[in-house]
Length: 208
Image (cartoon, rainbow, N blue to C red; front, side, top):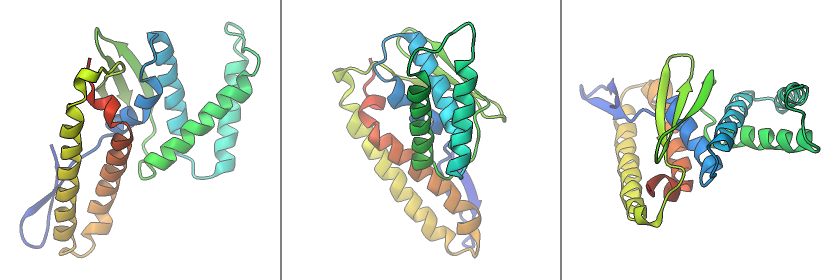
């Protein structure tokens, strides 16, 4: 499915949509790839959810306050005493996750209400609620060399998307204000997702 906008030529220009869940899945994947224990992967997803939401805040001092509050809350849990070095270690992880979100998806301002990992036989399912609905995305967390030929296929898809977006921008320029109002944000998000995908292409394409 693609988003369609009408330009001055009467034609519809299309931009491939990237949902919050799809972007969040790309953001999560490198942190769960090759993690053997499902319980540990589920904990990582929760940390990524916190990091994504903390990364929403533009002010570094405010992000630090949210990190400190989160660490304090977790460290005070009487049922799960924090091990030595927890504050520094988990706080550093949240800081790195928040910065990764800001680096990879600076144009996405959607918070994650809830993110859960569901176990399947060969893959995990990432269930993401962004406040507008629940979406599930498949994660391949244990790729094998047998899937490497698919890397070229995905790279070709990225190239095709980029070419299509260039044509979209050329068409959008013919309608005053359309690029700034609609097309640019959508294409910026697409670019961010493609850049993140490129960093993780071997992991996403090698299926068990």
